[in-house]
Image (cartoon, rainbow, N blue to C red; front, side):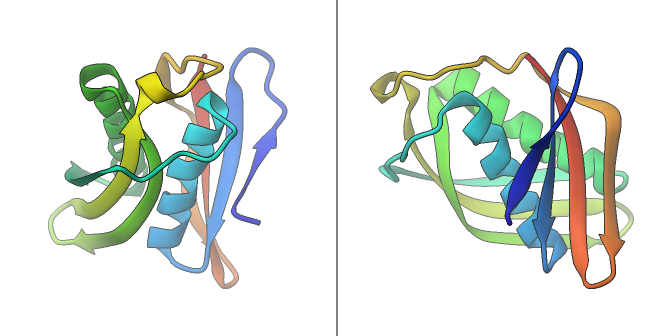
Length: 137
């Protein structure tokens, strides 16, 4: 299972899973897109993104916020993440190669207003990583 949606009174909460931190982040991004559009998205546009964060939660927040920014500013709707690399020096940094298409080619459902820190966590349990996120819709 890549991700699952959980009960929440007003917003949408999900957990994403991965064998690595990178895979859990990738699945978090795919869960985010799944809130807005449930069908197949073509991969006609390729981009590279870089984000930073003081800890894993801030990095996840900034990573997911980047997709909302790209959607609003460039009409970019994510379809897949080909490469993703997370490094830790003084702070965490993430570089990714992402694929997607123009959102105008799709009928999207829910609009996501914002990523929140509410109930957010990134942790390792046994041999898998789990990211939990609540988004404001």
